[in-house]
Image 1 (cartoon, rainbow, N blue to C red):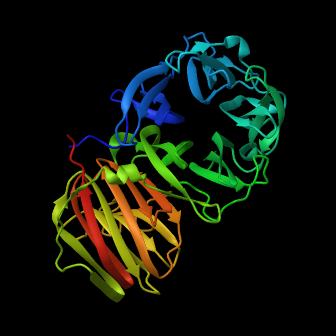
Image 2 (image 1 turned 90 degrees about the vertical axis):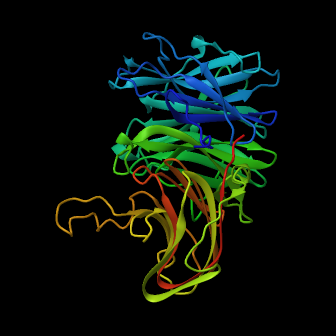
Image 3 (image 1 turned 60 degrees about the vertical axis):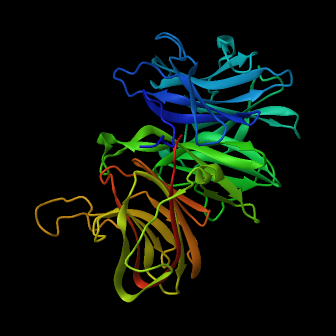
Length: 478
């Protein structure tokens, strides 16, 4: 198999990412997860990339502390550079043996600096600080620091929780300010919706006339979302489609280059490497490129560099030539390729959807008759794209003992605009990873374990769809 376009270290998994751009290179710090028992402590590791498809593993960058240190676990944070060229790394220190007054492990903001272009870091334990009164001491993490030039100060955002209020709605993005990056003063919350358990991995950036706030909802739905405003002080507006991706893509943080903005997150693995397994913390790194729409909202899709890396066309034939019309006003029909596809490929399908169509989309790793496959289904009447598979889990011996009352893979639903007309579906499949994008606006990522190979198909149900284009390409590594 060709080299993967998604990064995962050979000896572990990618947790929360801390992206930093320097001289055209993305320095992607991440929490290294090895799932050992007992847990050995968490460090920041580093991988670098220029083209978003080839990654150089640099190993451990910030080493976690010893068993008695406050940073036995060195969790998520951020990096900034001051006016003298010194890099400042802020991170979350946690030690399960260091308990707060509520019995939960303390979470603390800790500080390290580098004077050699981030080659080495010097920790400053004397600058450590925790949550002030009114906040839970066990939720004070993910410090994100940015420069507010208008106010002439540095601002630090933190995933925190109020110490009082409804248990599951105490989440708040707390805020501290500083003039020198050394001494920090707690101030009013940055964002306080009183809606979630907490808002992990906060991130803020300006792009054109807009400011954007990104956070990962730690609640009943593990989803990375964004808000938009004309100022870093808000008020923050909720876009119609406020999520970056679905359940599988989490803890995304951003970095810009050449006027573009990229979201770096991880696609979660599943327990026992099966489709039915529960989602796990950490997984494989994935990159989405944001595209700014005229109204300031963001669309999400594959980075141009990733698409361009698949350049070798794969010939695929069907029972009829394209363009092909799938006209089935009261039923279901599908075209399935004669050829099986390799484990890694890029596909692009252009579909013209007629008014009143119930469903259409792509079959992936399908059987020859299309009856066993993964399914990317567009549902115009419901305004959504979903990921599905058939057959679903079998729950017994009888014909009806199947998870047929589940409309699709739960938590893998993406609202989208599916008005009549032309729509483009793009897909990257790479081993057990799948990333789909609709109209360069809506992304959906997931794992695909149980069917390792198969064909590609297009389908329609209760309506009419014209398949005007279908191209499939692979990579040829040197």
